[in-house]
Length: 305
Image (cartoon, rainbow, N blue to C red; front, side, top):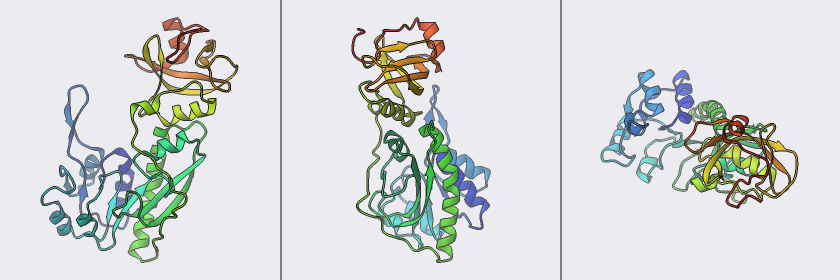
């Protein structure tokens, strides 16, 4: 059970393993793009490529869905980036429902663990397989693997890497359950933290914060919800940035000779890739030349000094 690209490597790894896939469940095709044409989810395309039986219910508790899952007679359900399973569905497989979560549970329970880990400046994250129950991301742990986070890695880049690494963790989990070599362990209670669903506002940059906090916000919000500030009354998205040199009033542009250096709460941040409102993303130097960006201008809500 899964829908987005994050789930595809797991499906492909299971196809290549000794385990038999009796059914794939994914979301319905959804309108997307400017033409709002129906677009199949990535898991559907991967399942079709592998010649696997497929269901696309409007919801997992749609009429007849539980009966279809019972008829499939799977020993276990593997769930990656899918909807919450109701109690009657969780009770169907004899070995339980295995979920892959991109954090070291109980840290970062919730919808956006990768983003919140980067926001927090974590140097490590990981992958957890666990048995689903009625508590969100609260079931017994099966396997965990720690993963180092690279210094300039964005949420999108880390998600791609974790999706590939997670596929192997899921296969090893299925192996361990099938041979009864895995013993589920309750999650520790003290170290739990949340990673709630994101809103656009979570990408807003506050220039009074430290350079490192701002860098982490930009990395974590890339690609979604997108880090942004205000310039000339319009939104300016920030895709990439590095630590800069200098000090000044927060939000004020200190230099434009190599990127756009902006004063922060404890130093400076150099913007290297930006996106003006209504325009494609571009190197910061191109933005400087094309929009006459000068030293002394202020980014953010406040007026220029």
